[in-house]
Amino acid sequence: MIYQYRKAINLQLLRNHGKRRLNNMFINGSDNKLELKTRDEDFSAPIWRNSVLFLFSVFTIYKIDEWYGLHHEGQGFFTRIIEYFKNKDNYTEIHIESLKKISELAKERLNQQDSKRIPIYRLKFPEQLNQGSSYNLIPGTEIDLSQYDIKTDIDNNNSSPQSS
Image 1 (tube, rainbow, N blue to C red):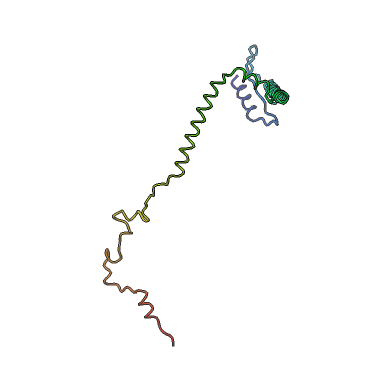
Image 2 (image 1 turned 90 degrees about the vertical axis):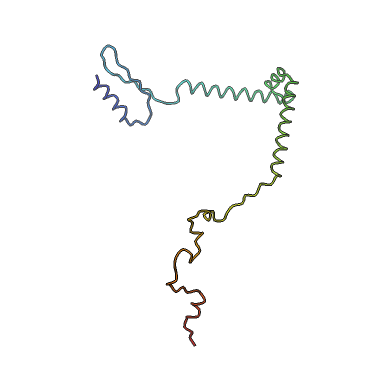
């Protein structure tokens, strides 16, 4: 039985079909054999049909409501139902409160845009603050250069041969 199960698994893993398949494995009760049922995986499942029909019906209802609105004061059937059931005073209060909040936020934003940023002063070479930094070494202070003859640009110009 284990051999048959392994054989069925290998068939599933090594199979190279153009279509993907949904596999159902079950053990047949009378023969104790592992059987494999396959179904093609495609768009014939009921969920695809139902979802396409649902989308088509929603689109149709929307277009009918839009057409109805053109002939009745520019308001569709669903818009008129919503207006009938809502409390107008409550919605106007909510609308006024939201407008106040929006105006306060706009004022704060304008104040923030007008304000200047605090200048941030930065060191050009922050490594100078370290004690062992090479920026702090002045030539001639750490090393004894008395035995060397250091030439400058002026010395180089004077020692160059003059051709006349």
